[in-house]
Every structure is written in C-alpha cells, then in structure tokens.
Amino acid sequence: MKKVMRKMIDWQRIWDDDGITGWYSPVKIIAYILSFFYRLIINFRNWLYDHKIFKEVVLPCPVISVGNITVGGTGKTPCVIMLAQMLQENGFKPAILSRGYSGKSIHPVNIVSDGHKILLDSETAGDEPFLIAQVLKRVPVITGAKRIVTGEAAINQFGANVLICDDAMQHRQIFRDVNLVLFDSHSLNRKNYILPRGRLREPIAGLGRASAFVLTRTNEVQQMKNTIGKLAQTEKIPIFMSIHKPKDIVKGDYSAQKSISILAGKKVCAFCGIANPDSFRKTLSDAQTQVLSFDIFPDHHRYSQCELEKIKVKFVDCHADFIVSTQKDGARLKEFPEFLNLIYMLRIELEIVPSGESFKKFILDRLATAQKNKLTTRMPA
Image (cartoon, rainbow, N blue to C red):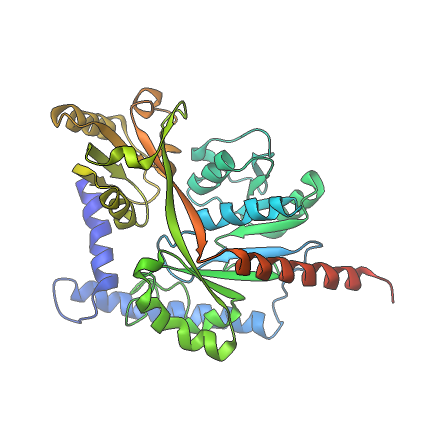
C-alpha cells in the first residue's frame, strides 16, 4: 500500500513541478518524450474529426457532454447529477451514458440502473455510474465503451429524449449539441503540459470545441479565470461559475442523515480514495471539525479488509466521534457492510452561482435549437 501511495504522490509532484532538475529529472525527460508523441497522436485524431474524415454520428435526440481536458477530479459527477435533475424538472427524460471507468464489465451495453432499480454493483459498473444511479431516480444509467451503442439503447429501451455523456470531451464519435467543459482551480498548471508529463489530456486548443465553461470550486478560481478568460472572450464561449456545496452527511447504509454542522468541534477520522482529496479535507476544515487522521488512497481504490481495520483501530484509539468519507468511497464498500454502517459519507451538490437561471436558460435554449434542427433534418424534402 505504501508503495502504491508513493507512486501516486511521485506523479503528482512531476505534474506540478515546473523545474527541470531534482530527483525526478530522468522520469520527467522520459515523460517529455512520451508527451511529444502523445500530442502528435491527439492532434492528428482531432484533425481527422475537424476535417470530417472521421464522422461524428448524430443521434436522434440532443446530446450533452460533460467533460474536461485534464486528469483529476473537476466535479463532473455532481454536474451530471445537477443537469439530470434540472432536465427532469423541465419535462425531459434524460439518460446518463458513461464508459464505466474502473468497472469490470466488458459488455457493449451495461444497464447500471433502469431508472427504478440498480442492477449492477460499483465493481461491475464503475464508481461514478453506480453513485449517479444511487442518487438519481427515474433516470437510466448505462455504461459501455461506445456511446453510440449505449445512446441508442437509452433511446430505444427507455425512451430517453436527451442524453448526458459523462466524461466525454475526448470522445468524438458521437455528435454533441452541448459541450460543457469543467475546470477547478487546480485543473491547469502554468506550463500546461500534455500527458504523461502534465495533466492535460489534449492541447489547450481543444477548448475551442466547448459550448460553455463551468468553473467549479470558485472560491479558488481566480487563476483559472486568467487561464481561459482570453480564449472564452475570443471564441465567445460563456463561462458559468459554480460551487461544490456540502449537502449533508449520511450513514453508510443510508439509515440516517445529519446536517454537516453536526461535525463542528467533533473529533473525526477521515479517509478517501478520490482524485481531489484536498477538496474533501477543506470541506471538513470549513465545517470546523477536529481531523485526527486523514488517510489518502488512490482514486478508484478498492479497499481491503486490512486497510479498513486499520482505520477502525485509529477511530477507537483516538476516541473519535465519527469516521467520515465521501459518497464515492461509500459506493466501493458494499462488500464490507459492517464497516460501512460505522461511517458517515459526505454528500456534495454542484450549484451554479450566483444564480442558476442563466445556466438553465443556456441549456434549454441549446436543447430547443437542437430538437428543431433534428426535426428539420428528419423531414422529407
């Protein structure tokens, strides 16, 4: 476990280090070389799509993509949930499409939820799709490698009239009518290196495909404004601000929920295996908790009985009041019901600020235009 953690921390330091000297110089040199070839491949692929040599498949209903161009958590899952709920409130029948990253299923179409019942566990479906299925009611959640196939399944089997593609910025096989690109304050560092030297999945020029930018965790967002503000102004891409707002803490078995304010002054043992553990730590700090221990695991980590037992021992030895983790981590603990029932999970909501009305109007207007265009295209000449 220590070796795994060390490896993860090393890559974080490589991505964040702008210098060319130090302990990681040999690794950085290799990463620079690999980044060069990776950039060539990505640029060539995008060129093929931009020049219509590779065709984007247009599905019969509007498609919204929620993605980013960086490695790491920017808040896509809370954004997907917020979008689906907003669309439901406005009369749409959304479905969620995901590749099911970290899930074990290899079938082309995996029904995680039919909108009424969860049919796959997190290990099979992947963390994010399972969590989305837990939160959303009457919204099908489907995973599969090809969103063309899963999109057709959502339309034909469940009557979906709008598709939300989770983490689909780089998935260009399917045409999207709204392309939302998310950033948080740590998404882009100063040098903007391409993988594996840096965090970028593709060059900054790819942002020109965005319909809108959504800046998350905006209390730390000034640097991001400076980074993308010029591009947004040049391309006339709207920018929406958002916050990750703690909703509450809920018992691991969902048998009880409490206001996060109950953590004020309480002794807490915390742990998480997410892309942005600092955000979780900050939320606990803002709640004025006494964090006695904070164990960080790799993103999408599958916990062992031994690891959970160590957390439990710390909890007992420290005489803490709560063990707290994230809802995403809770989705990976179903095979440990006894431990799951000991913990509380932090639930987070994404909220557009200062008001969500402008964002809602933007989305609904784009969907109305998309529906009109698709109807016109289907009409005989």
